[in-house]
Length: 420
Ligand code: HEM
View (tube, rainbow, N blue to C red):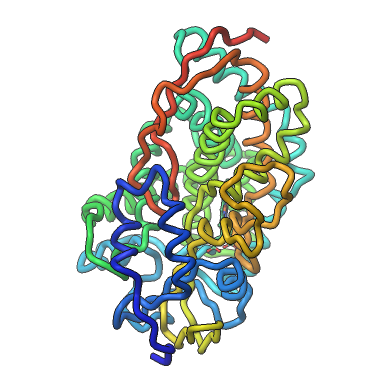
């Protein structure tokens, strides 16, 4: 370990893991950022929080996503870490999110076409119909919880339709996904603390794997024009991807395709309810949604941190990250770095897209165009149709998840949901 010595903050990482921080972790992020890059005690774990440090590592050639490079035992995916001694019972292989080139390049190329901006534009009418149907249902029930009634149903429906996953299976998928999203929280490698039951995580991992095994088996006997059939065709054509890679890709897309976007829609709605003049503009100027979404991605990012493992020494001002070290990049802290964003705690949709919410470099979010469109449409329909929405719970309750942070519910009162 070749760090310049620097005392770690006073248990700040434990504080970050504390669910009590979930509603507003930004003052803590500011303290961590002011402290500078920090090694957690004697561990090979380094926490980075400035824009410069996070962006440098995300673009760095020696920054790997492959956990085999770690000097402490990390499994091929976080679920393997959390599973600990049960890892032998796990089925499946790592998805592209945890693979370096050349495997990463090969797998990413196979799915990239499905999420290109032109393809996403073609989905707009369907996304709008799903958003409006969700608001219609809420109007029928006479109450609106932005998370349960809009932010969740929209992206889960879209990704299920893209993958050819029957929506009837959504309740089961929700259980697996909620658990597996927790495996992205960097608890096992760093500090002790509350963590989900490993046996449950292993079960969720394996059941989701088996679920896609069956879905693929059924899809092979039918002709389809969805992403799943395209991936099956690639698998059957030869060496494009293995069967296990096909399953891992489906599972990744299913989870990444909605867990994050739910938070983007929810976080944006919350920001607009706190900044009502922007909500008023959006009601009459739908094109404003793009700037609002971009600022929401900076201001309150759905993914709060990204891990990397150094394959070789990475030198940053104030710290050397040695080969085998785990770097945890607090991108939510970087998005509030005052050396890059003037008055960073202010919600200002005029800033542009210079945030790290979708990552940077080779693993830059593949679904960014889809996420942006889904969120822009959801928030535009909400602003247009829901008259005088008011928060009933401020701050709303948050889910436990640290990495994929977002509100559990956002109940609002309103005077009317305008019919279309
Ligand atoms: C607001 C919504 C979203 C956010 C904030 C988000 C964020 C991210 C981030 C930060 C990464 C990079 C992780 C890393 O560097 O280790 C990533 C990767 C990825 N995202 Fe997203 N994502 C969102 C929506 C989506 C959607 C809708 C999909 C697919 C339908 C998707 C699919 C992926 C995939 C496949 C990767 C892995 C890319 C790779 O390894 O090359 N994401 N996302």
